[in-house]
Length: 200
Image (cartoon, rainbow, N blue to C red; front, side, top):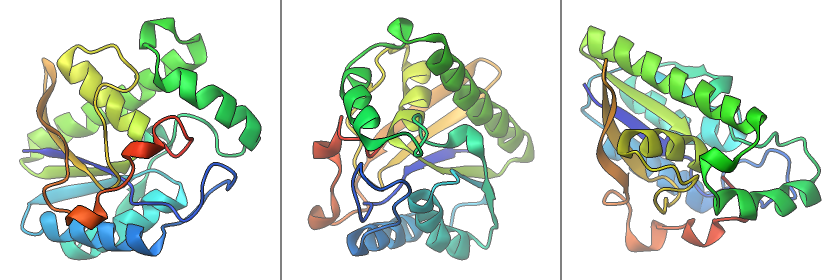
């Protein structure tokens, strides 16, 4: 059993948009992820409620003949309804920081993400079927950080539509590969420059 954590494709708008969908390139990235996941034996597809993740999940759901389950626990760390200026001011320092230095509400958000990934992962392990989760930079970073013992909010660079693979057991999460872009053409690799720019 493998957990596939997919970061959403390139969004069509930046930090000023409350809930942007995918840009045309983001749709191509989503199709590339679906192609890469062809043939896996997935039993569930969990997705953040935001448009860019739901649209990324659409070709994956079609390829795997699964219905996407919308889960608030794997949504973006900052509420998209917050004023753009407030999000811009917070996201850079936050992404450069460590979890141990974050306020209680962010620590609680991190625990919700981890619990959702681990619980779904253990259920997938018991079923013998793979699990796909389409989420965001910081949420996927939570799972990577816990699996590797890295307390940084951003433990690895993570491109749009990258695929992180791990396993779950009663000892926790184990990382197989972080933020792979092997399924993307060179011109489809985007998102590294967006660190700290509010498109987590």
